[in-house]
Length: 171
Length: 339
Image (cartoon, rainbow over all chains, first blue to last red; front, side, top):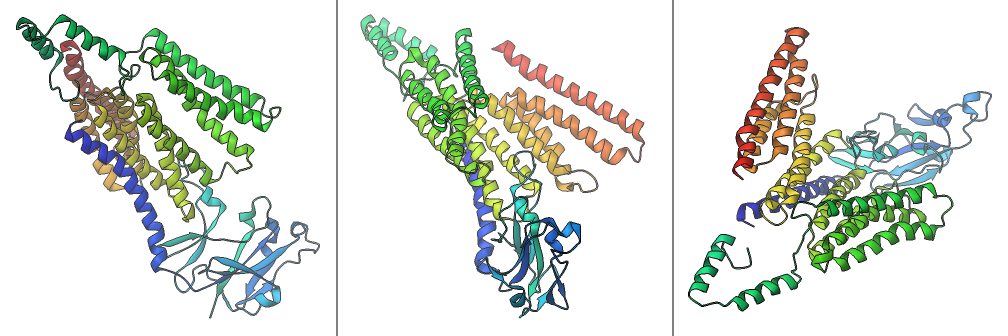
């Protein structure tokens, strides 16, 4: 094999390897330098109709529609639990309604230090840019950092659709 | 030719004539050397992909492909009635058995073509076997980790096999499994990211296409030359297709990729002469035509009017077609005639 071909072979193997290394770097290097101390509250239910169970009023968690009321659309919602998520440890702790009420919340989608909780993209998957598995997850994103959230869901159906963001915890 | 010998066959024969005339070599010595070459099993003998296939060899490959189809249909039609062990035995078991048979037959140059058909069965059945095995183990097949693990296992297996058996067919499957692994691995890495942009798929395809082209070039003068055609074709298809897609569509087009695309396409058409690759010429021509139509529709249909834009595009296509025909007749057909 002449030198030109050896160089071509080297580049052919190095190019995809370099891309993988760059992707790894773009994911893990920001995590070394960027972190957030701001936690947030969210709740997950066992049905779409649970989305109105809790709301933020006057920077506090308040109850929404009564799940066992006469409203037919909400009668499918049997359970909705509130969680406090620690952004740094990426862990959630279940709270009672009374415990959640003790937190002062900022219901803006973006926190004061520039982070947000977003759902993954539904397209761009392999092959041919189709459905992406990222759509099944929520991500903690901001300042070049993006990591999958370990969120507590009920083990049923379209569980990611039952995630409801409440607000960022204000110190 | 051989290790340390830098002579053409004609030069070697001429040298033999000279040695014979000077009585420095005997007929028996020549005969023994020839027979020794025939009976030794060379480490890199690879009879099938290095020459034109005969009818029997085509039938070997067809037979192998049909066996694979039979296995796949058997399993899927009887999925509910077969036990887990049977499913694994039929799929993964067949892959392993075919591989062992192929490896054993590959040791003898006379059974090398048959060995290739068994190695083909193994390579086609192995992914199915691994999917079935993971499935009966209760593992979620949709998991990105499994989608990456399977091509990873196949890549390592066939890479080791290639270095052991030195078959171009195994190298071909190394490249196929390697490509699958590359796309799966990058998708797995981005599983932790908020957005898997469509643009990233195009960049990955661009890199893959470029790698294919460079691999094709690196194999073009050696014993793996038959793989160059496949690599050039898929490489240039992915390379130009990615850049074409990266250009986007008005009003959200990417000006950089849209402007650079024609230069790259003309570069590809020029390279078709240098590399003697018809794939470069054909796909370069097709993409150039597609580009003319795209730009005409994007930027000129509104201002010049659709009918005039179509006329311009049509003349453009005629010009490109003639350019392609000219290059083909001057550089490709001339090469065939002189050969």
